[in-house]
Structure formats: C-alpha cells, structure tokens
Image (tube, one colour):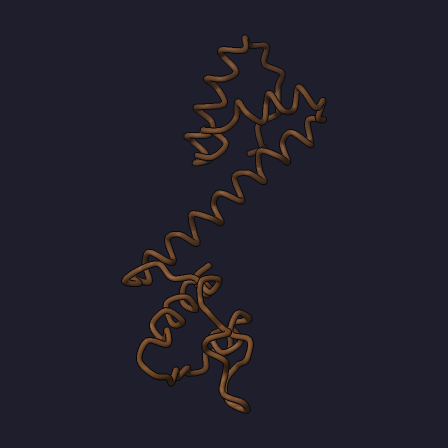
Length: 139
C-alpha cells in the first residue's frame, strides 16, 4: 500500500483555520493549535518562507513540550516547596575546603548518581540546597 499523495486543496481562510485546528487535535499539537494565529501574522509581516514559518511553529511546540515535561518531573518529585539554586546564598555557606563539590550548579554528583551529604549548622539552608538541586536536576 502506498502513501497518500499530497494534493492541492483550495479552501477559504476560515476552512483552512478549521482544518489546522482539527489536524492539531488529531496530531496532539496543543501549542501549535493554541498559538497558530500569532506565528501566522508574524510570518506575513516578516515575509517568512514556508519552511521558516513551519520551523517557527515546530520549535514553539518543542519548547512548550520541554517546559511541560520539566514541570511534570518537578511535580512528580513531590518537593514540599519551590526552591531554586539562584536563591541560595553561596557566600554565606562556602564549601568546606577539599570536600564536596565547590560548584553544585553543575550537578556533577547528581549526574554521576553519587550520594550527597550536607553538613552545617541549623539555619544554613540544607533543605533549600537539596530541594534546589533536585529541581535543577528535574529541569
């Protein structure tokens, strides 16, 4: 059985929008379906080629899927609250010389699957660091 041939379909703008909406539902492309009007207008303004227009749409879908995938991983981790590495005060909590990773943002221990032990006085941000590292790894 051969693949169906592409054929030219003359349709009105309204029919084309309905066809795009239905095709996006069928192909499960929610971002393209929700945002197709914006890139269409931009493509007309900037006189993008068909390939350029298609690339913009597909890249928007990919970016949104990556963001949603990251959000699902963070939610599935079940952290008790949101904490970020950018909010951690590294100056107030310098690493112990010769021990540990002086650059935790690189997530070296997490990527290698090595254990992590945080030591410090009360109020130094150990839970913050653990949640922030987990969040960064989930992204």
